[in-house]
Structure formats: structure tokens, C-alpha cells
Image (cartoon, rainbow, N blue to C red):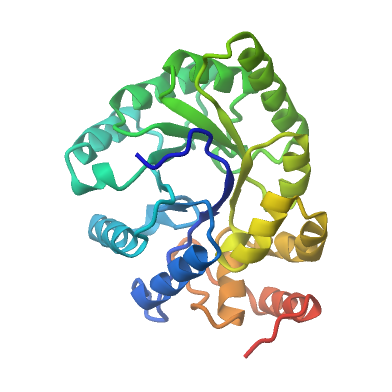
Length: 306
């Protein structure tokens, strides 16, 4: 296992690049992976929300996994997006993957809170404990209430960490609520102080716009959308806590999510000539107005386009 004792630093939530015809663009995928490798990004998250996994068929998912694993041959951890709202189905698929070639290539799963069904905190607890019991890999919780309709409270995350005894290793906290992030950090640190033998629990910011503030508060890192395009700058932001970089990208980060994710980051990558802006329904590509705003902001912060 290449998972770090403390999962920390910068992780890129990798997009799935599509061609103009709508198929997977494997040349662009290799280009993106090379950018992450050259920037020495600490880990990557594949086939998560930003990767539009919900719109991919099983053959495409297997093909992307094979391509990423074949190309991304480093000692950096790979995290696989793996979640949903059908607990039994998730556990069944995890059991199947336990006997696949992936077992020795993926280091952890990132599992989102069940969306649409809006479970209680007890429902969240039981859902993730079931996943923990069936997963061949450690689990990173993913709290993103703006997408799922349910907010995992810090107390629930702490209960899962403590009861899983090393099987649940962290959380991607994307509630956009700094007070919630600070409470998670406080509860984690208080427990560690009284239980120094406990396995570590990494608290990873899931909002690019809050990265500097979260790191200053004691977060362990960032799982980033923006680092698809700007991995070197975001490595400096996280590892050097360079607030100037946060300020530099502040307006662009807002534009990334103006019409949904990964619509914005794909528009950025298209303007930079890295891949197309194509997404799959029900998402649609960035509007001409958003493209124009993104282009203007990229020029403003010093990028040459075209």
C-alpha cells in the first residue's frame, strides 16, 4: 500500500476529458496525468464527481482505470471515487473489485454521502460502516451537502473514524462551512490528545476557495478541482500556504462553479488548449458568456491563450 500514514497535501480530483464527438479522449487524459506527475501532486482522485463517473458506462470506467493505472506508475497514492445511495450495491461491487487487478493499484476509496435519499446521521453512520466492512481499501468520507442534500455532522465523522479503527482514514469536507471544518479539526485533535495510539484521521478541504483558510486552521490538505489546470501553483498554495496564490485565483475559482462542476474547469482547460470543454448530459458545456469571463480572467492573471 502506498497510502501515506497521514493522507495530506494536494490531491487533484481528475476530470474525464471527452472529444468533440463525446468519447473519452485518452490523449488528453495522458496529458493531464503528465501535468499532475510533473507537478509532483501528492495524490489523485479518479472517477469521482469531477470525473463524471455517473455518466460513464462500465466499459468506459474499466478502460479509464486501466489507462490511469498503466500511466500513473509512481509511488503517489491513487484514490478511487466509489459511492452512491444503494448501500448493498456498493458493497457488492467493492467485494467484486477485491479480486480484480485494481486491488494492488488503488490505495483508498473516496465515498460520497448518499445523495437524493437524505438519510439521518444514524443512516450515514450505518451506510459507511457497511462500506468499511466490505472495502478492500481504506475509506475517505466525502461530505458535500450542496450536491447530496445531507450534511454529515462532525460528530458522525468522528464516530465513524473511531469505530472503524483505521479503516476510515479521513474526510473530504466540502460543506463550504469553515466553522464545520474547524470543529472537525478540534474534535480530531482532542481525541488524538487523549488517544495517542489512535490511527490518524486526515481532514481534507474540498473547496478550492477555502484552501488557504482551511490549511491555516489545521487541515491536512486539499482535494482540488482547479489543480487539474494549475497543479504547480496549487502545490505551492498547499505546501507553502501561499495566500498570494489563493488571492490570484479567487475570482477564477468562483467562475469554475458558476454553471456546475466540472463545466467550469473544462472550460478553463479548453481555453488553455489542454482538452475540450465537452461534458455529458445532463450537464452542458459552459455558456459563451462564462467562456468569455474565464478567458478574460485567465488573461488578467497572466496566461497566454491560443
